[in-house]
Length: 369
Ligand SMILES: [Zn+2]
Image (cartoon, rainbow, N blue to C red; front, side, top):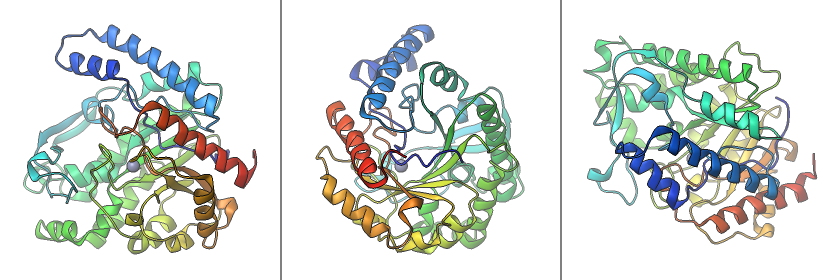
């Protein structure tokens, strides 16, 4: 790990209406690749300028090239088929018919192409400070993609599928490290599934033991970063309860039931944790984060435009410091601003103000270190 990055953010930024329209036209084959690419480039340059202006410690490209937070993984890897997910998540404010389809592992997985190289090359060229690339977690892809009756014809066990996905991610991460990425962030809306009895009972009905699955998931997410040259790169995991479109989410509850295993055993330098609403529970589970690591407190909300006060955020940081020393803490919004193409109900000025607030409070608490 190279820096504490006290003023962090999860990664995705709102796309402009023009860029959304361009993505939609491209999806319908009405817009050429190079025209979309040129527009993405322009908007990413502007996004980088904005992040530098507010003073955030790590730059992202806002995930502006992506249609959604998972990016191109399932398009760059053969073996996925779109289908109904193996279990239904209890999405708030969404009907079952609106629940997302899943990418089911239906054939042996084989990586056909790199899936973050374009993003990394552009950031490397245009960023003058550390930059990050985000990737979906192996455990997430398997939790949504391992379907008994389909996947077990290809991979004998869930653990085997996890190992296959982790190996692909590991090779992508190794390439990113070679290319100079400073910060790799694995996004994971899956671990909070273990807080939901409604999800676990569906797994049990499919023959998946949640206790074993959690241990297998942690092993796979560790395998994705095992043996890599970690000296110049920060490796992080973002725990997510789903924040699409401001109103939707699928998990709630304190981290307590998974904290000891996840924080204690995941071989990651930092954990980006949602803490913007009561849905995330208290700070007590932070006691399981090893003091050599950093818990990034997601105290500023990307779900609402209204700006929190610096005093409120500062007070919450102090409360968290009762369970983990300040030196092992950092600050960010609880999630990205746009994990989907359309993103959250928040405008560019509000987005900028939220990031500026993160920087403001981080500097007051930790100085410029
Ligand atoms: Zn998130």
